[in-house]
Length: 75
Image 1 (spheres, helix red, strand yellow):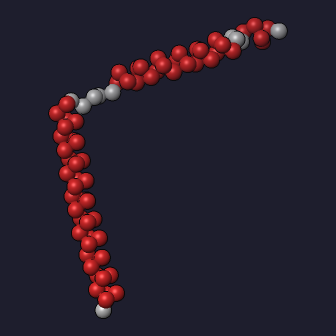
Image 2: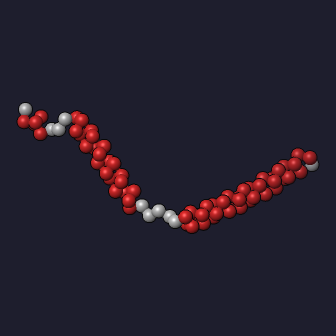
Image 3: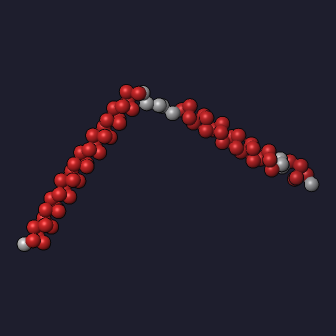
């Protein structure tokens, strides 16, 4: 019987765990170093340029292979 008296009820255990989760979550979010607007714009520009370069390179490779296949089929 003494063992049951020390154990908190299920609702206190559940809401205590949920409350701790949100307190820990807020503490971690406060530790985040957020980028400035200038950094975000710069990083966005870099990503767009790299995507365009990769797209052009893939287009060129695909066009070259398509031309080679066309030559082999018609030869």
